[in-house]
Length: 193
Image (cartoon, rainbow, N blue to C red; front, top):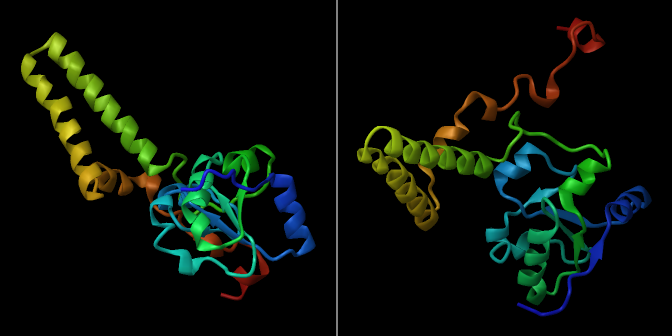
């Protein structure tokens, strides 16, 4: 990785680029579930762990604006892609700054939390509950935090997380009914049906 600092722009500069019609490619380097929860309009999702293998997906003749939740992973992606020869720019403050400024985002799922965050919460609760049960009921409850720990190691080694798979099927993580093409009752299009 290069030791040079990434070139950055703020969200207001990005808005100015959009308003002026300046060509640029917006790439969100967060996970697919974080991207589905909320992302900037027009963004392409290339998770950080895939950026080095997907340089062909990056535009050659326009700036590639990298965005994540707060800017940290976008700077990491910029460092990983330095050798690609692309014109890389990091959107300072990321999606969080965009949301705080009140700008619109695209939601592809009803989830309010990224799946990885849900897994961390569930794993933490199971471990804490197991430890509490060891103190209150029996030492055999140590198997619960041990099982959770083994599951996390397995997920880290294989890239497959059974707990994540279960959580992804929960009602709050399912796509919204009606989606983007829902037509309000009483609108001219609904009268045509």
